[in-house]
Length: 161
Image (cartoon, rainbow, N blue to C red; front, side):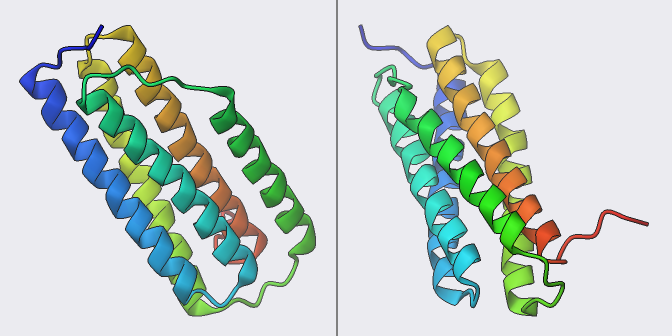
């Protein structure tokens, strides 16, 4: 049975869809600009996830409840394993300033987008939609963690005083 969205739900979901589209564009653009092959791979992987998020929101906007399958969870685990490998191979504190700027911009973007999902989740009436959006938000948080870990491992993000 198709889900009926309120005007407010539809507007919030359209905003989220726009955010996901922006992420796809930025990750693709930055993957082409970065000098670091590890960061390029991270950007490409995240771009693919953001495209899946965009597609999921498109399904919801068309009245369908998305099937949140195991494949997306496996992709998140694979991305985390890649990040762990990158961290163990890192160790150099020298880095390209442009790469640091690109990574920082995407980390800031992921922080913002993760936060906007809070409002969308709380405003949705349908439990299945809330769960789908919650799943996407967890992916966004994982993207932020991946970027943070990359930046910290490469001396771009110092958390020590």
